Amino acid sequence: MDERLKQFEEKMTKAYDYLVADLATIRAGRANPHVLDKIKVDYYGTPTPIQQVGNISVPEARMIQIAPWEKSLIREIEKAIMASDVGITPSNDGSVIRLVFPELTEERRKELVKEVKKKGEDGKVAIRNIRREGNDAFKKLAKEEVSEDEIKQLEDKLQKLTDKFVKDIDGLVEEKSKEILTV
Image 1 (tube, rainbow, N blue to C red):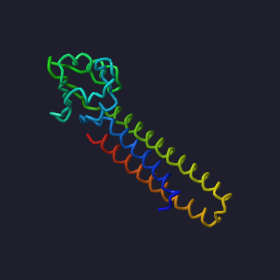
Image 2 (cartoon, rainbow, N blue to C red):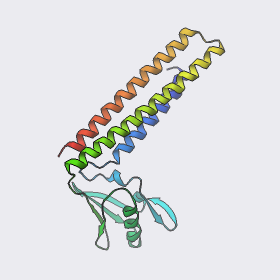
Image 3 (spheres, one colour):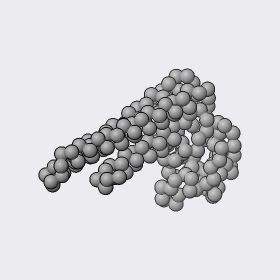
């Protein structure tokens, strides 16, 4: 692949990967440990990812269990979960914290699907912005004695890349929406 195209493909890949990670944090009725990915716990004055202060497991379909490596962290972990947008109240028995996910209502499922579609649209906008940035860069090449045909080819290849990523995002959104709506 042309070196001039490669940088834009890398940016598109990063935008796509970000969307994949972002969609993984949306809960779909089943317990998914990724909903905790963005939560930081105050660990001796340092904000630390929750995965680094305890063992996270999914013992049942709708429950996440967090076993902190230090019992003194239970309070801090609970506080971090309460302050986050997970929307679940943690309970503990002195040694482990449990997050029980309620069954999603039909209304909540529809809200989540809207959220997924919005994130998908944002992802597609990011991809298109990268395409525009690429096309602008290619137009500047005209001043550097690059033929119009070559510029047209680069723009066509960039458009094909854009189409591929937009199609992938549509598939991702469709898959996540199905997962959320499945009771």
